[in-house]
Amino acid sequence: MTEALYLDDSGVRSFEATVERALDDRIVLDATHFYPEGGGQPADRGVLSDGSREWPVTDVQKQDTIYHHVTGTPPEPGTTVRGDLDAERRETLSRYHTAQHLLSAVLLDEYDAETTGNQIYTDSARIDAAYDRFDGTDLADIETRLNDLVDAGTPVTWYTLDREVAERELDPERTRLELLPDSITELRIVEVEGPDGDVFDRTACAGTHVTSTDAVGEVTVTGRETAGKGEERLRFVLE
Image (cartoon, rainbow, N blue to C red; front, side, top):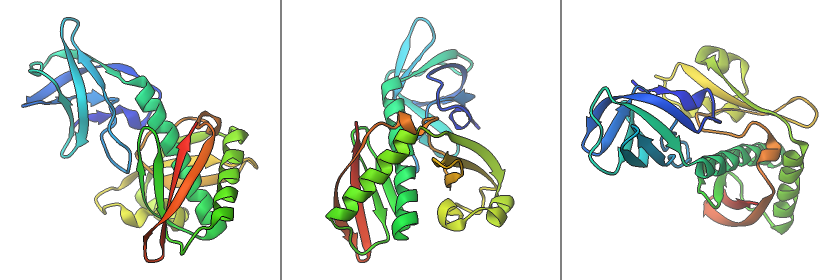
C-alpha cells in the first residue's frame, strides 16, 4: 500500500520514491505526495523522472492503492524516481479546498444549511447546500463573511483522530462522519481557527489545504442555482 505523504504535509512539491509495480500506464510507488482524485478535489499532475527519463503524470487515482497514470512505457519495479508536482495546480486546488471549508462553515452557522456536495476546479468551485433559496442579499453577505475570514489570516491545521473518539467528542453536523465508510477507523481532521481564536470549522477531510486563511485570496460568489428540491448550488471563484 502506497504511503500517502500528502496527508501529513500539503506543502511538499518534490520527493523521491521507489517504483513498486508498473501496470500498463499505471505506476505504484512506495510513497507519494501526488493527491489522488477524491472528495471533490481533482488529482494532482506533474512528472516522475529517474535522471535520464521523464514520465508525465496525467492522472492519479486511489483504489486498492494509489495509481499514477503516466505517458510512455513505465519504469521497472525497483527504480528510484523523483516526483515533481505541478506546484501552481496544487496551490490553486489547496486554496479552493480551504475556501470550500470556510463556505460550508458559514452556510451552516448563519443559514443552518448543511453542505450536501461540492466540486473543485482549477478556476472555480461549487457547493450544494440544503436550503430553499438564497437571494442576492444572502450572496453578498456570504461573500463579505468569507472575505472577513480570509483577511483574518488564521491557522489551518490537520491531525489524525481515532474514529470512536471523533464520534464521541466532535460535532457530527460539521464533521459529517456518517458519510465515511465504517472501515475507516482513523480520521484526518482539518481545523480552521476563527478570528476569536476558537475553532471555526472542524471537518473530516483527506484533501490538501493552505496553512492560513489569508493564503486563500479574495473570494467572489458568482451566483446560485437550484440543485434540486430544497437544495441550492453556490458557485465561487478566487482571486
